[in-house]
Image 1: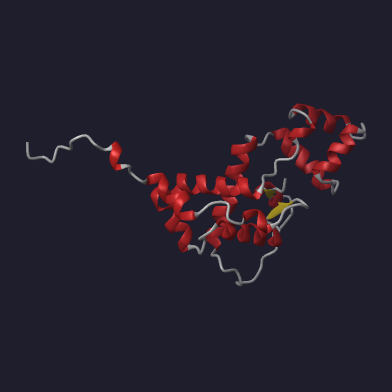
Image 2: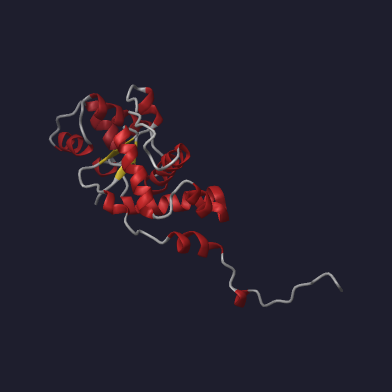
Length: 191
C-alpha cells in the first residue's frame, strides 16, 4: 500500500530545512498549510497521537539514515541497542513503527479536516485555492515532497490521488436537507 507522511515541525527544528520552490506553484501557501495540517490530522486519526517513544525512534532513524523497514529488520535480527529495541516494544511492536498513510486515506482525511474547519464553506475555500479535485491534493502533496516538507515511500504515486471522490458530492451532500425528513409544520409566527 502506498503511503505518505508529514515531516513534523520537530524535524524542521532538528535541521531538516525544507527546500523552497519558486513561485511556480499553482496553489497558494494557504493550500500547502491546510494540507500539512490535514496530513497531521489524518495520521493522528488513523494511528493515534505520536508518542514520545515514537519521536525518539524517528530521531534514531534519521540520525542513522534508516527507513522504517530497515529498523524493523535490525529489530528482528537483534542488532539494535537495547534502548531502541525497548522503545519498539514500548510502542507495541515493529508493526507500529510506520505511521504513513495512503493517498486515498489522506484524501478522505483532508475532506474530514476541511469539513471540521470550514463546514459548509469547505469546498468553496478549497476552490478558492485552486483545489477542485483529489488530484489537486496529490499535486500539493508531491510538491511538498519535492520541497522536503513531506516524505513518501517507494510505492507512492501521484495516481494514488486520482478520482478518490467527487468534490461536489463529498462536500455538498453532507449538508443537504432531505425534504421528506422535514414534514412537521413550522410555526410561521402568525399564531
